[in-house]
Amino acid sequence: MYYKNFICSVAYIFLIAILTACGNNAIKGSGEMKKITPEEVQAFAMEDTGFIYIKSPLKSDNEADEKILQGFKRAAEQQEIDFYVFDEGEHQKWVKDDLGVNLLSQSIGFYQNGEKKEGLDLSRVNEKDQALKEINQFIDNVKSDYFN
Image 1 (tube, rainbow, N blue to C red):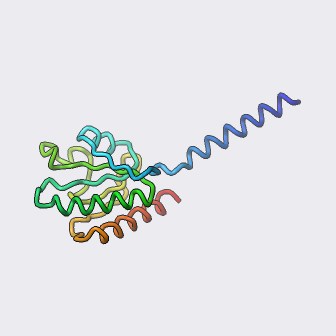
Image 2: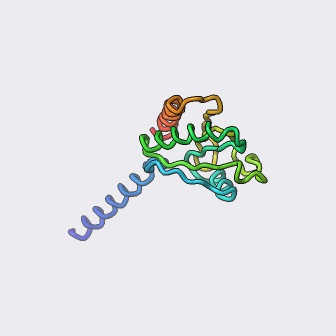
Image 3: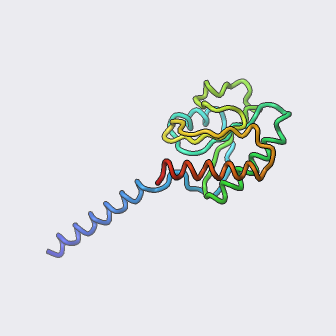
């Protein structure tokens, strides 16, 4: 009898562990920003879940990109998520569409299991605080739409 109760308890704990793991938020993190290569972008766009920012290849957009990235970094820390950055300027021989990323420069995309679910164009954002506000709203919307 004791053996049977023990086996049932272990099975019950194992089932709870599996269900808990399945329900984990796949975008949880610590606000880390990771630059990725074209090969990593391809892999991300095919199978990963998370956020990606496409940095403009134009030198004239560097200041705007930095404001957006500062806002994104702050929002990511507040929201406890990690995100990827693809710098088109460093990889100009690659075309985003060939990599499987359907985003404009200076935009953020949310991908789930390799499929683009949402996008946010930040090319017209002039202030860091405005970028932070829009990014936080975007992340909140993604969390409520895909993880609640």
